[in-house]
Image 1 (tube, helix red, strand yellow):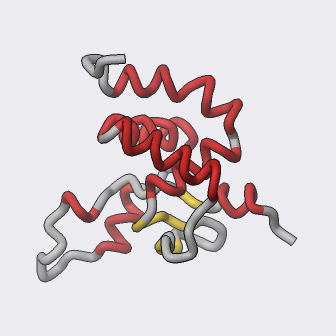
Image 2 (cartoon, rainbow, N blue to C red):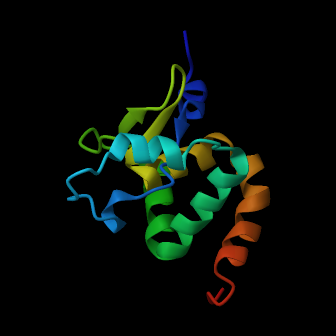
Length: 127
């Protein structure tokens, strides 16, 4: 039986967010574009993406973290994925929620690096 941490490790944060793309193009292939953006996905990219999500709205991200850490996820908040390959999936809806779950599941590893990545991604952000 596979555990929650192993399931999380099968999820890759989507490195291309469709909300910021023109997806109404006639030839737009979202799955192909997602797979291409995540082709060489690794832990450094994952931590950078988490830092970027944190930079977008620090207060909202921390509020989500605290909410999930205390209550877990409400049943109505689905995470949507596309299959990348046999063992990996790319998150297309729910990047922030998956990022929070990954931080909680791997707290020591992420805690050592996330502040450094956050300030590197957004040095002008007030502390």
